[in-house]
Amino acid sequence: MDKFKKIIDKGFTENYLSEDINNIRKSLSDYGVNLDENRNRQNQLIKQLKFKLRSSINKEKNENLLLRATESFQEAINKGLEKPIAYLNGLIKENQLLFQYNKLDKLSSDEIKEIIKDQNLIEIIELLEDE
Picture (cartoon, one colour):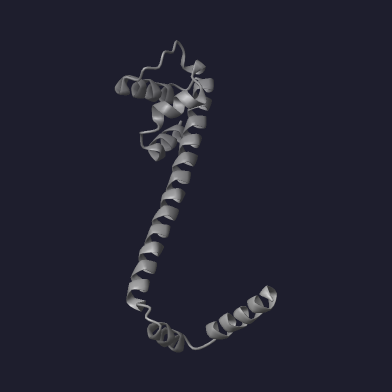
């Protein structure tokens, strides 16, 4: 019996949804549904979802830039390029970071990320690519 009831309910729903949208709106209004209030809630939900999506995309882009800059700094350190090394040393001194280091080549990826994370990553990448 439950299966039969579900089939009938599904038929009513599909029939209802295939009707003209104005008839559906009128029917909902007849049942006491406040369409304007529902539309406002839907719009607010859509705005929230868009914001979360943009935030997620921006976070992913920032993480990719940070990874790229970190890898470029490690490569520059390994090659002994003066300009990027001087820039990294400047960031360390400027931020007065609590890193205990003897040599830059001993810095881990995480330590480099910590040093450069609040900087303009695009500027850093351009600097490293120019070198």
